[in-house]
Length: 334
Image (tube, one colour):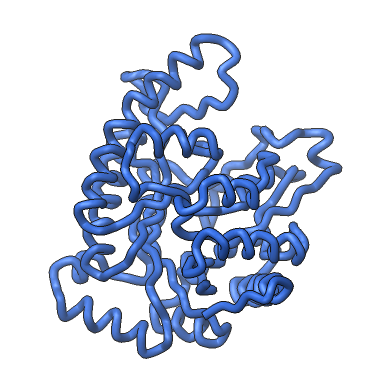
């Protein structure tokens, strides 16, 4: 297994600064943004797509510091009904596939997308509990858009020798194991599978280890991100809490068009935290063992989103917890 990092948390540094951090922390795998919700902070797709020399120079720089580019991350909403967002995200996903193929990167991480509720919609709709048939109608419509898009996109990636790892992300059509399996079965190709990010599974009450065991070789890559659950808030608000707050001031994080990321509720039921600040080291050991069993060469890339820790501090804590967990099962990172 390789231990690495998803570099979006270091968006304040250039690629040389990212490589310095990677070397300092002894990690050997990098996952870089390539578009979608967030810009390509640490690579220049336009130049890399057209210049073999630029690609050789870029990969040489990584190799000289002992790093392997294990994935391009293109998380976004390619099915977004807003014309300023959906078509751009879809085009950037295709561009990421092209770039991954040219760079020899095996995996592109993506999200399924979420269409609107009907053809005239301009904003996405996320249906999680279709109690009445109106919501079943919405899901039927959304899947009628998602399946052809992903059949075509996955076939395109297959022709390029690239695997698509879908993150199960709330607010997307695919957000849990059953919806991911539905997409995989509908597409019917071997190069679509899972990015194992346990953080979104924890607060849905889903067992990440069991999920790895069920999907087996369809687990293409993994994001290492923890979730802290706050029982005192959970008992009052539940997990499906609509008290998230608009971030209107400095530091507003745009994700395409007129849209931006909200802030946690004042009393959240959960937060994403550094590895070991939510689940025990013993859990992370079992999780790594399960990953190793299905894919001994898998890349485990830390995704640091802990709001209470600095960028470097969070990476340090996560690296230590993962190494301690691996040691419990005699596992080593290459």
